[in-house]
Structure formats: structure tokens, C-alpha cells
Image (cartoon, rainbow, N blue to C red):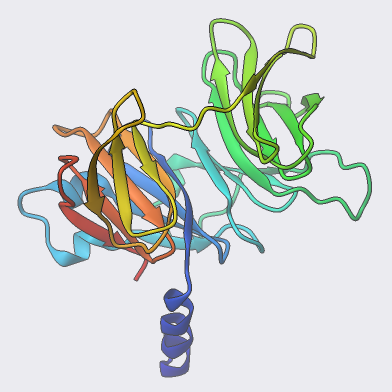
Length: 273
């Protein structure tokens, strides 16, 4: 990289936000995406090793995934999925550690007009039946069949953008949470809304504005507050398959991704640099 390119990159990193994370199915790698359209691949098992060096905490690969911000990531056994402005892309996990990796496919959900290009804020994969639910910035929840590449459902009911989706895999049902302050339950067999639930905001692990991860009891009482590197948090990722450790990675308005092997303190940080 030229000196001018290095200066531009350094300035860019001052303003970077990590918006999404997803762990590889094997548990050895972590994908993290930022608001400049980049995805970084980290060797998580190497970073956690007792012999880890500083270079093990930097990406093994960084690549331009979308022209706009990458708002969401999700994984299947074979694919990393990324969501941006009006498109979702599939990448082969086996190729992501190599320079020059290319997407396997791109899908664009149908829009009501050329002026309506919804950001894809959330992705959740049904591993058994091979489909993915998308949380749209236009207030719609969409379902993409990963085998046929077709969008099979468009579910509308939210009055504002949809932030997040979750699945009930034993039943073909999708939960969606929106800016309108509601959680909606959708049944894909009928394509209709089953239930509307007003949001009661509590989480076991919670982050937002402020450089802290909050540990909450089920009652909502704060049990602890752990300092983190980002001044605001955008993404939390638990890694149940990580080798030898229960790992939590925390990211937000910073190029640093904090790694916790014990919820009482930060073990170290990964970085886009």
C-alpha cells in the first residue's frame, strides 16, 4: 500500500463501525462487517491460543463485499451470508481466507419502486430447511429459499423498519422486531401474522450507547457493567462452538472487536487494522 493509501486507510479506520458478526460453523473463524462495505475474517482459534502473537489478532483477510454498509451477517454450514442496501450475497466459507475471494451469488429482494431499496438489517438462517429470513428497512420481513434462490414470502405489518428476525425452527415461524416497538410472530404456512407482542426491553447481555457491556438478571436488574473498547455497541456474538472456550465478541463504533472468555473482563481485542 502506498503512503497516501496508508493515510487514507488510517483516516477511514478512525470512523469505522463494526455493524455485524458471524462465527464460522467450525468455530475457528469469525467474520465481522463494517459500514464501509468490508468483511474481515479473523482466525479466532489462533487468537485464543496461549502462543498467540499480535498478528494473530489481525484479520487473515479483508475484502470489499458491498458498495454500501454491511448491516448483517449469518452463516450456514457452507456459506457466509451478508446483507447490505437491497441485496444479500452468499460467500463460500472455504474461500474466505484467500485474497481475491468472490461472492457465489447475489440476490435482490423485489421492491415496490426503484426508489425503495431497503437495507437488510438482520439475517437468520433455518439450517434444517435451508431458508433465510431477512429484516428489511422498508418494514417488510422476507424469506429467501437458499436452494432455489427465490423469495418465497414478503410479510408486512410493521409500521417502520425491521431491526431483527429470529426463528422457531420446529414450526415454520419467524419473529420480527421493529422500530415501531412491536414484536410480530409470522406463520410461513399461511403467510399471516399469528401474534403481536408489545416489547418489554430486557436482555441478559445488553449494549448500546456508552462504552460498556451490561450484564442483567432476568428481572432486568443490572448485575454488572464491563468496560469495552467501542464508545457504542452494535453487535454481540456468542460462539458456542469455539474451541475450549465459551467466547463472546463485542463490536460497535470502533475498528476493535473485544473478545471475552469470561464475562467479568475483556481478554483482548481483534482489530480491522
